[in-house]
Length: 143
Image (tube, rainbow, N blue to C red; front, side):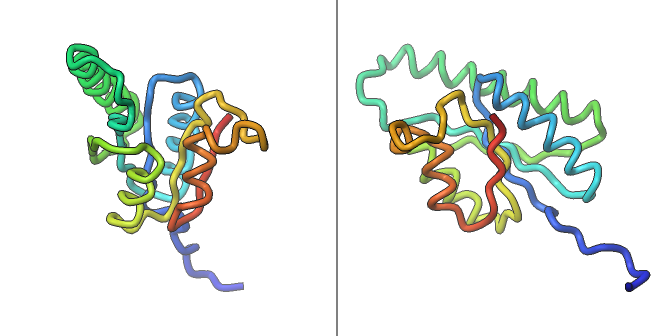
């Protein structure tokens, strides 16, 4: 056995966030991982532009909600002395998450399951399932 420190496994963790219990559970796990591996966290909020029936006013409210959520999660991480980078993107959530993971060379995507089970019947509906299949790096899905 080598006496050298272990290699950092998850130095760059991409954490897509949204308003759900599962996403908040994922944040708790990310805190533990970052503290263990001394990594960094990149928070990503994706505004789904694939929804064609949303009113313009509704989209503006949704964007405000996303901004507030990003601030809230950043504050939670700051309480644990974890510095974060924040990204906001528009697009198809699964594709955008994977594109960003590739752009930043993420070592891990840690995300909530958003309450949709990963089973055969709902697999095509689940953002988490799509991310698992498209991701350029390992994916941790928190139920």
